Image 1 (cartoon, rainbow over the protein chains, first blue to last red):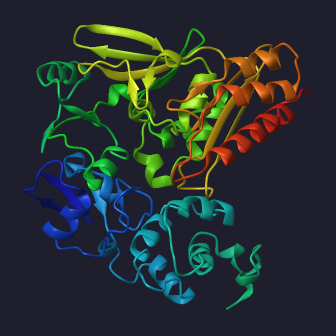
Image 2 (spheres, each protein chain N blue to C red; image 1 turned 135 degrees about the vertical axis):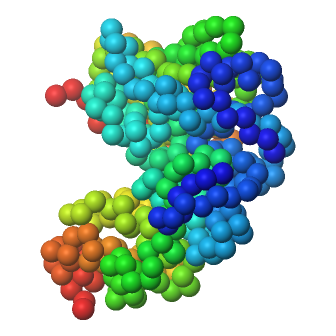
Length: 157
Length: 268
């Protein structure tokens, strides 16, 4: 089975019903994608499939043949969204972070805080209380709104 | 586990006829939950995801036809759905989060048949018809006649859902879901209604199957008043205590939602 992983073609021998999550972690050795709930509730295993966030725990690998898969490793470490997460301290335990960053990449530029929240609604975080995550995302997608947004916390620098 | 990957709907139907035990899989958002939990024992699956001909949403002769593989994201983006059946777009926005909306399909919600399926009260209140197809041909079943018991329907093992058809909907549409949180929640109570000359109402998580509320509708349509309608609703539903909620809570909230529907759809 061939697909594009983080910009490079890969060929994998795996059972067709294997979860994309397991193939990424075990066959491809990319453990940045985390397993949280294993039932599509938490979003920790989010990857971008042809640019759209999906839960890798719910996708049979056979359905990504000829598709493009982007995992957190594909961002390289100093992507603007990753830098924003670092700058805002938008991570604590870190399990949700890879999925959160990838979903955040799909927030349309110029989004309001409500749109940011709606896009990230499928990514649960049990540590941060979300505020720092929203600030990080806003820093990238709508920097103009960031210091004066509805959140009091936006004023913090 | 084996996965059959047809290229066309016709090929899929032939494969299903030859492999009557095969479980169809589309976006996998329900199927993989069961697989991951070990509650689904199937060994042979039929992949429908690549059958783009089942993704179309179109309107013809007053009928809105939503392909079974249309994802909730596609439904939210669809102009035809937003114009004709805005309550379906509202329901789609409240299903899961974007990850689930990108992969979950309308046909899957119907096939999964959970009494808590959020699109089902919408489709019931809209008088939707399910289009089923097998290698032997096509048949249409009113959604209200589709379920025969908890997660049981009239679909045959050689059939797949190919589309849902919705006739013209006259009146104001209304949808409300109550769960533990705004996103990623399974409904404790979910209600959809249309207020036209005739009132049409349906509710989920209130019985073994999603329910069309005929007596409640009749009470409201005949002008019997909201108090009377609320009493009819009480008699029509049979909620249970389960891990998500209690019977008492569900009854109270269902009645409150009915009042809210009636208030919020009152004429201009």
